Image 1 (spheres, each protein chain N blue to C red):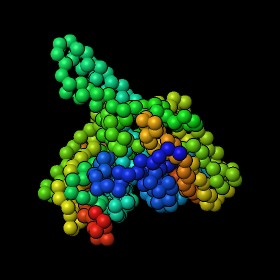
Image 2 (cartoon, rainbow over the protein chains, first blue to last red; image 1 turned 120 degrees about the vertical axis):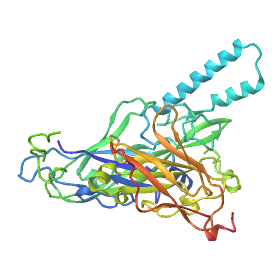
Image 3 (cartoon, chains in turn yellow, brown; image 1 turned 180 degrees about the horizontal axis):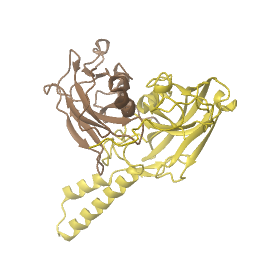
Image 4 (cartoon, one colour; image 1 turned 135 degrees about the horizontal axis):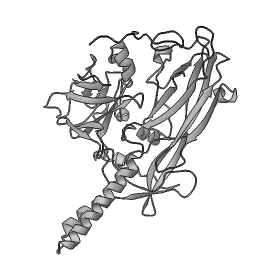
Length: 260
Length: 155
């Protein structure tokens, strides 16, 4: 089983929302620099995809690509997948407990109530139509509840489609997979690649960013749909094992474990 | 079309979000090649203010006195481990403190910029990679820099 390509796209969401464009506001990475991907960390990534055979001519599995979008300046994707939802619930639970404690203590001061009110935070609704985010409490970029609409953590960009030459010429077959639970953000895009026709094939990624706007005294997530480009470079070279530089077969491990 | 809330940008008020400096690290390649510099990519959220060196280990972040800075890390593969172990910077400029996102052990660092800078101030970040116990420090150094010359009048 060959390694899957992970393609990470880092979006400068703040700049993209301001300029209403992804030009100059995306940074692309894959984990195949070793095999010849170029432009890693820039807007001009060309992802290398070797052929589906090994050095000895034996059949390898087709290459799988996975795309992972992330927002620059947000809570990083290394926190648990459901972090924002869990954090919101934990925070509400704490606030309720403290509120109950206040009630039993007899006298309730304004200051205490104000403090708890701040902790309740603000909720942003999803916009009336179309795909979007679920209603959720605002967290800032350090995971704390915030009432300031200027401090919210940018939600991860959502890939809505992958099109372009690489798709129309049937070089790759992208599709969206995963759990349809939008709260837990379970969707991801993956593709398999036909490596029988070497060449460079551009593709277009359609991305939805989310901006918080005040509308009728409410905060609403407004979706902003933008596109950006990248390329695949299909080559005829055989797949290589990252450890041995050869095909499948035994790894270069000593047959007898070292004494000690 | 809802009104776009953009007035705040015109005012001299501080941005509410911190200036985030993100290190993207390929820990597998860094450990395999024993070269962190080639597998380290810095970005920040202050490109509009004139930060330079995006995608290199020598990012120059444009900052002003009073800005809150936040450093965090994104590993290139989600199964791998990278953490920001330490930040060495002149304490007269900033004194970073280590924090975690509430309810997790994922580390970030924050600091407040204590003074406006006339010269770029290089600083050093070190990273924990994989299961190796001692931190790795890249040779190249990122820097904090003051407002761009052409921007001075406007600010």
